Length: 122
Image 1 (cartoon, rainbow, N blue to C red):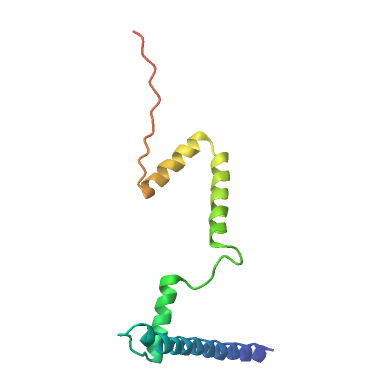
Image 2: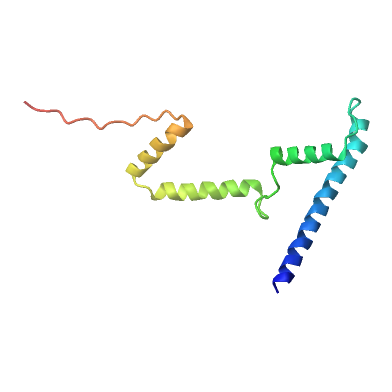
């Protein structure tokens, strides 16, 4: 039984390596087909340069995890709804404490008004 899982792991590793190789090859072929035609000074690139471009684009633009079927803005709306609900359940003291703690990180100019002191009578 243990050997079965080892063989599956090795097979998955081989398929993953083949997929990565194929994606790099596609990037190289697309670059070499399109870029010299579109841009006059663009040169053809090697396979490893294509892999570098692919890695750089993944670092700059993300790895494609997405929001699991929901749009990008829907995730932000969920966050806003949760924060609005949390804000509405806070007491005024908790709200001031929250504003003060986040104000340091966001460079907010929050002025906490002191309650006026009672006049002392002599």
